[in-house]
Image: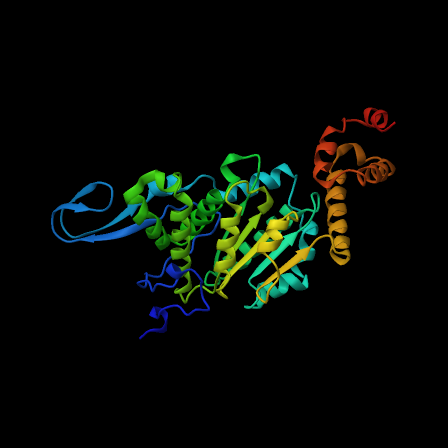
Length: 359
């Protein structure tokens, strides 16, 4: 028997329904996270008459292979596109500056997570203004480049929580976003969603049982990925867990359980909270990277300074007066990093108004 069709071992995924063997799918095309090709299934029909292909029938004449788009299912699954959220966040913060995140790529904890199969979850925790979100953005950028150069390396999915946005502040939304990214990269995975969607429609993603249904779909998708020998790993990133207002315990439990597989890797970020700390306590497979520790705090400080210097250097008012630039940089050291861009945008054009403001 082909080893890929054997039942997954106990060292793969903890939930019982993850371990079911699945029929081997045809080798899919891995789509870049930046593309928006619509997944479709193929149906072969011989003869004439009505062919049932899901919601509704199609009249077919002769032997044909049809491409049946899952457009409605995919549209209803999408509460947001995390790729758009990432771009929006980066634009709001001014620019994803490599100097503000590159330090973490060489950090020992990140290197273990990246290359050691026994290190499967890394929790980045820190106070506000430490640049956690931009760190996640930078890590995602680097991982995307790596996967694009090696399409057999794996699939990548991410989500950015924001407490003030009802679309992205709950556990169900996180799962919808992660699943949406997976099925837009690996087309065959949409079948796991479509099978349930054919019975329930859009309510599958929105009713009181949405979390139960989506968590099972997510685990079935992971099981399918783990049986695909052409994919090395599945990488997941969730930013600002502390801003997940509803269902956080269930989400953390699911994350911890799926870490039982050496081919499923997670990076999470949040402020420190007791409930998150209890769920993500360090083990052989889980680690935490605290931005408050002295050695990390120094790197964070350098990253924030690089961010400030970059934005100050872009202001026209400072290009003819380097001394003024130094004075403003000193002033901005007292500003929380997440407010720096707002302060810079409020600086009036021209040297005279700027001097008046500083006086």
